[in-house]
Image 1 (spheres, rainbow, N blue to C red):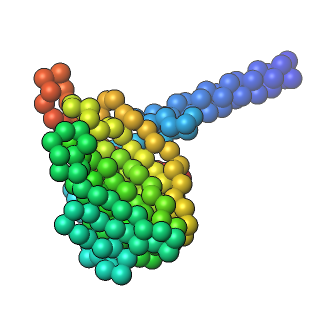
Image 2: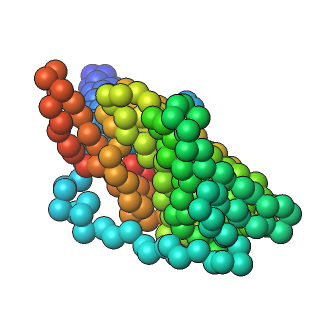
Image 3: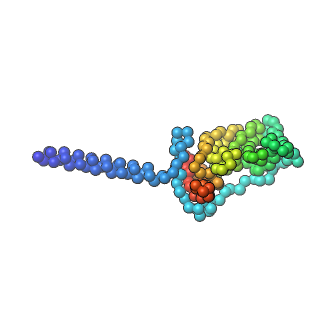
Length: 224
């Protein structure tokens, strides 16, 4: 009888422990209310306050061109790399080929120049390597990480559809920029993004209701 009681007691403890473990697992999975699936990996989006988002600052970048590298003319911009010259020529015609280019920034420590193009109904952003002359095109302004080894790109176009609506992530080194991922999004638009740390980005999200009214919220996206 004593042995049977011990068996029943042990079995009960195992069942209770198993139930507690299952309860903990459910609670843990629900701690993240939103996420993005990108290339088979889930990136969680945890809610933050608007006040916290506004307090996080964006580091300054060099917005004055180095005239030994970037030459700005009335009708074009030329980036002089060690390997070749990269020319961006304006097209002032009326039509879809129209484009005007502008110098945006220099990332001298990384060896890159940012040039942006305003096209007929869309924009383009180009990051030029000043050693090789390679041109990496991204959807919108690349945002450099605090460690200066990654670019985060956000592009919001929920209505017109002329531009991609989503995010991109690139790694940056001395000679190449490598795309880690890109994700087009249907349910919300990334209106603004800031690096919180080298492994997390804060995003201001635009959502449209059934009456096409705009609503905003703020999330943290962990990238590690």
